[in-house]
Picture 1: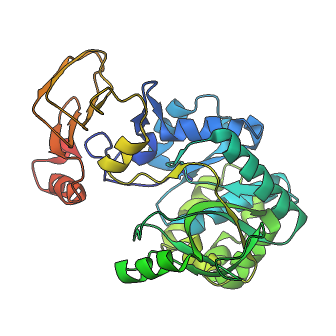
Picture 2 (picture 1 turned 45 degrees about the vertical axis):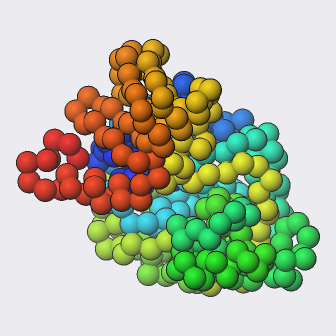
Amino acid sequence: MAGGRGSRFWPLTREDRPKQFLEIGQEGKTLLRLTYERFAKMFAPENILVVTLEKYGKAAMESVPELPEGNLLLEPYSRGTAPCIAFATCEILRRNPDATMVVTPADQVIMDEDVFCDTVKNISAHAAATRTLVTIGVVPDKPDTNFGYIQIAGGKKNKTVPMKVKTFTEKPDAALAAVFCKSGEFYWNSGIFAWQAKVIMEEMNRYIPEVTSLFAGWEKYLGTAGSREFLERVYTSCSNLSIDYGVMEKTDSAWLYPAKFGWADIDSWESLYKVITGKDEAANCINAEKSLLEHSHHCLMLSKNRKKLVAVRGLENYAVIDTDDVLLICPLDSAEIKELSAGVAMPDYEDYR
């Protein structure tokens, strides 16, 4: 799933190149590229589909040029993860009615990739052998309101794998998130799922028929010249809905595998700083080929032009983000960047969106 429109990493991300096209690390690979390479270790290229918005199609192919053309599924409009998954499920059923699907966001950072691959293989095998909806849960390290939470059945002493899910809660408030973390019964929802294509379609038909009914007739249209017009009708009529709220909070068929690998759903400059490796002796993270840094510590310095000399003195815990047309300087832990970037919606700032 590569259709997000996040603005938290402006000005590196823009309206036409959102978070999934953010380049991280010294190699300059996008998050979508890194996700593709991760799954290419487990699945044949012809079995990897990327779902994104039409306006991001070119950027997606630039990130993954080897992706077979028919494996780029283009949504006319952004309508959330439920329609996205319904679209992908129809396409997969068209190719193989007995397929097992793995669903993942394209904008996460994964460490310990060998462990991650083993976990994905485990959830895939479990889903293929059962009529269950399997997800990966991450042990929370703080009460974070940006994530959904999954409660396991049997309490915190439950050590069985996989674990039966008791409840899904999408993005609770701070007080409830603190209760969840303290209980030891809750995991963060990674947004990574495995299920049989026909099983998730049955569950969506049961719980969100207002979405799946719009895809009626997909067997006749998908993969044909009439596909674009068909999808335009579907997405025009479809409301915005997440798979978590639409299905996972209601189903009694959810199971969870705990993550034993490093995982981060980056949503701020500070979280990006934490996952980028290769920091200097002063804990600065910089992607420029040459730099002059004095009395600067714990900073994130990213330049669109890696050959530009970056010279900084006297900064601590700051983000310095330099693009062709915008220079952003702000505290690394600032929580108001989204509000600042919203300023480009004002007249005379169109060129910076």
